[in-house]
Amino acid sequence: MLFSWATALAITCIFSQCKKSNDKKPSCQIITATFAPNVSTIHLTYNPEGKPSRIVSNILDMTYEYSADSVIIVTFQSGNFQSKTIATLNKDGLATNVRTENDSLGTTWSNTIYEYNGQELSRSTLTTSMGGMPVVTTYTWVNQNLILSTTGTTSQTLGYYTNRPRQTGDYLLLAQQLQGYEIYRSKNLLKTIDGTSLNYEFGTDGRINSFTATTGANEIFVNYEYQCE
Image (cartoon, rainbow, N blue to C red; front, side):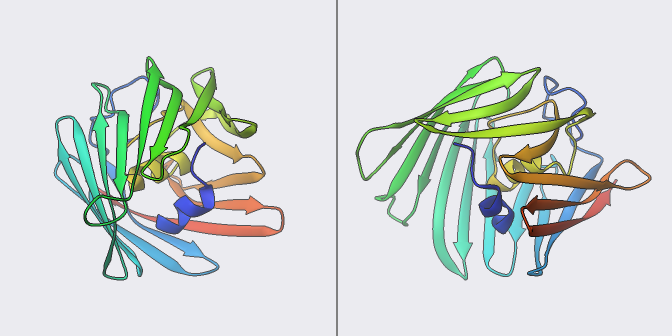
């Protein structure tokens, strides 16, 4: 399954076509994301290639170390080690294997293998140090957009603003940027995840200034601050 949008927001480059390379450094980068009504702010810093090097909030501190075909993400929560994630990347920069260790010795872990049809995620297989049967998720795409993920009898649906390309500030793009690796590159801007609707506010320069995630009567507002070259 895709990660919970609420969880991703808590921890928490324009692509005109999702098939284009993701290596080009964006001209404007998000340096803060502020969440309301429970006000918290995430601060992002980047390496010379325009990739996140550190993300800090009032609780989390995440560092990112890159090589040609992998990225290592280390997370501390309130100053204590929380996890170490090692993501192996393919030639397109998409993760093919992600191992997360939840203790400093690596004895408690989860591992996910990702399979693709071209650049479209088709299947993932999760195993853990607890044993048991692997958890297999399949993914359905239409017009270069991920629209459905299915794990057993549980599914998650996604919808898009088909008149707008995915761009910096898109929820799915930001969430993957924060986690340190990509597994899906949809063509268009995300509009819905199951019962949650995403409404974006744009500036006169075309950038996304903020968005509101609405689930029933509940709303989370996210505001961005950019740094541009």
